[in-house]
Length: 376
Picture 1 (cartoon, one colour):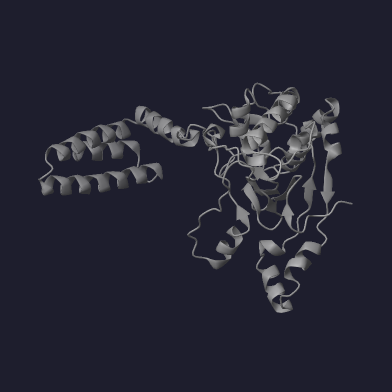
Picture 2 (picture 1 turned 90 degrees about the horizontal axis):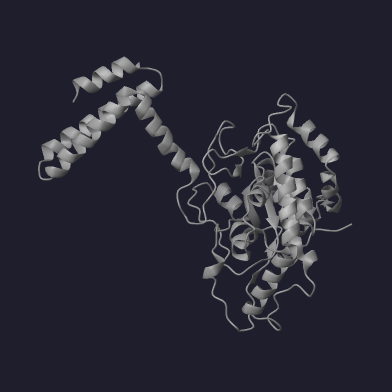
């Protein structure tokens, strides 16, 4: 039986899940960009300690901006089981469903930047490694592009298979049948009927058997250990770890975890159409996924859309916006008049307080409109 690596993870892919925290963690070697710890300003020592075990990737690294050279120097970032990559649960699957595999650059920027190439290394016809003695950055990049080209047909087929499965299970993209059936029953039935169950056959589960905790904490006092366990120190928690050399098998493992949880639905964004898992509420309709071009997320765009809809549907809010713009212009044209600015600030504070009461259901629309009219 395979064991967890006790030191650096220089090959293979390992993933495990924390359902309670809605997170997934993974370890694998990554290449060609800087890996940064998440900056934290948390005051709580336990929260700081928790973040020290996690590495958060800077998303959407543009491979076209990666400076390559002909020096034989390594640009490889092996991770460890103890200091690992962390993200919201299901993100690997979500990123795979949304990935743009139309070119090597887009495939890297939307998927492989985060998860590396270990999960498709079965397509490598030669030694797959970034070795500082034998290979330059440019040669290594050519190797990765060759891996992409060799695996492309299968990547597209797997992506299509998982999209169809997710659409059926979560009633997305026009799949409205069997809405009354449970997500889990639909998943199992679909995988059996469409042979997707075969994707589960190349995953190995490494049962957490205390060996790694022993190796890391054996010199601590028993009192300190008991306190850490009671305080739910993440370094002392046990999780089964899944490993595979097959991308399709890891995706199946993640989906199998998600369909067992009623509070982790997969949806499609009403703006961009990408798949996402709601972050705060299950009825969310806009995703919070980053965009390659760095533009505002759909959730941010959605807030603007909803605000405009509210302005159109609630006359009192439309009147507030109109008055606000007029008063701002008056302040701008009279920059030296402190009284105008003071009166505007007072009006804005009172108006926003009234709007807050309206949104809380403590003030009806007629009363809000009347106040706006009387306080022009």
